[in-house]
Length: 276
Image (spheres, rainbow, N blue to C red):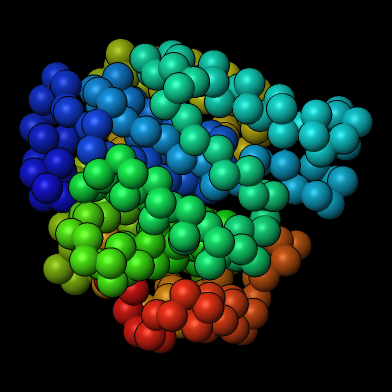
C-alpha cells in the first residue's frame, strides 16, 4: 500500500483514494508546507494535528498580538480551516490532539496511544508524517509517535501500515536546509515538481496561515518530496547529531531527547530499538 501510494503520487493520478490514509503533522501549516498542492488529489484523507500551534511561553502570542495562548491557538485553527478548504477539505477531515506547541516530546506515550486508536478505528493503511531530522523537536516527536503507534498496533495483531515521510528542515553547518531529506540509502525519493496552478494554490494556502507569514516566506513553492520512511532508531540522534533545535530556545537538547525516547519506549512497553 505504501509503495502503491507513492507510485500514484508520482504518476500524477488526478485523484487518489485516501480514505485509508492519514496525514499526521505537528503544527497547523505543516500540512500545507509538506503536501499542500496534493491535498485536492487525496480523496478522503484525514489530517491529524498533534499540537495546537500555541506555545505556552507567552512570547509567541504577544508577538502576534494576542492576549492569551487560547486566542492564538483559536486563530491558528481558523487559519488551518481556511487553508485546507482551499485544498478541498472540510473541517470534518481535521483531528486535533491539542498538545501545547513545543511540548509534544513531553507527551509521546499519550500521543502514540491516541494515534494508534485513530489508525485502528479508521483502518489506516498509509500514514504520511515528518521525517526524523533534528529540525524541530515537535516534528521529531510526531515521527516517533507514528512509528511507535505502528508497533503498538502490531503487538495487537494488526497489520503494519506503511509510513511515508516528508522533509521540513534540518541543520547544515551554520545554516538551515529546507525541504530536503537527509540522505538515507535504500529510501528513494518521490519528487513532485509543482505546476504553476499547483504553486498558485499552495501560495494561497500558505497565505491563509497569516500569523506564520514571516516563517513560511523562507520555504520554496517549487517541489514536494516524499519517501518511504526508514526504520529509524529514535534513541540515536538524527543528522549525525547536528540538531537545529539546540541552536534555538525550543526547550530541547540531544541528551534530553534520548532520555525522553527511552522513557517513552519503556512506558509503552516497547524495546529500545528501531521503531519500525
